[in-house]
Amino acid sequence: MAQEMQIAQQSFELPASIEAQKVEKNRIEELLEQQTHLMMRHLQLTEDHSKSNLQFMFQTAKDMLKKVDPSVRSIFADWHKELRAKTNIYVAQSRLWNRYQQAAESETLIRPFAEEAKKSWSWPLAYKANAQPTAAFEASQQGPYDVDAAFAGLRQRHAREAQEFVLVHQKACLEQISGDLSLSFQCELLLQQVKAWLQLNGSFFREPNLAEQLLTQQARCFAELACREEMAK
Image 1 (cartoon, helix red, strand yellow):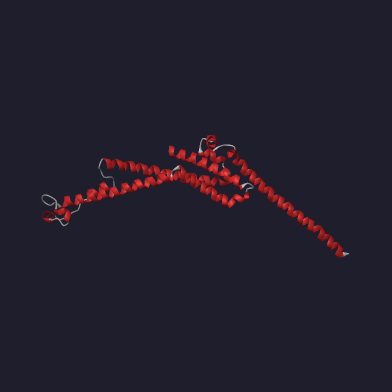
Image 2: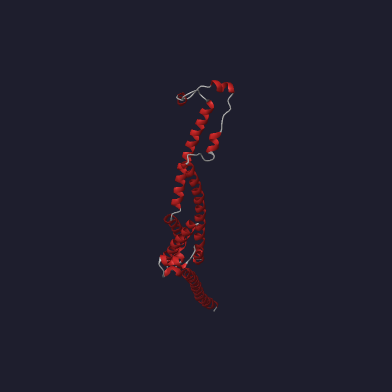
């Protein structure tokens, strides 16, 4: 009798366990469905609009950021922060380049090269009165040898060489930053970050391809809005 009751109890517990598993499975599926629905609700803003139409839906990148899915909003925000920082660097370097160009056009030295070129050297008067050229290029100078003038000329030449070196690299620096701030480069940078996030989290969506498509569209439009705003400053 006891054995029959035990068997009956086990038979009762087994369906109950199976039922509990089904309930848990349904709950997980429901949570996934809710998450997918939430994602799609945020992304629905772009589903029926072309890229150009989406841009007109938002006046600023800040406005659009509010509508981006919370799961990826930090990616967009961090990218925008880096863009602003690099834009500030570009502005500062552009101002330097303009000042350097003006100096080069007027054939003047910029600081600190102008200050370096003015520095002199103190030799004893007795030596200066009898100083003779020690370098080959000095021997070709006309008239009495002046060690102070020779030293000043040497510093001027070195200062101009150093300034020219800085000008060349300043131009290259500005061109590099300008390339990094191009829309194509910045857009691709944001897209790569979004794709990296999707590789880790795309499986949570029932339609990962659609999620990728819509997030990609949002990233492109956000990049264009942000770049346009930063370049207008």
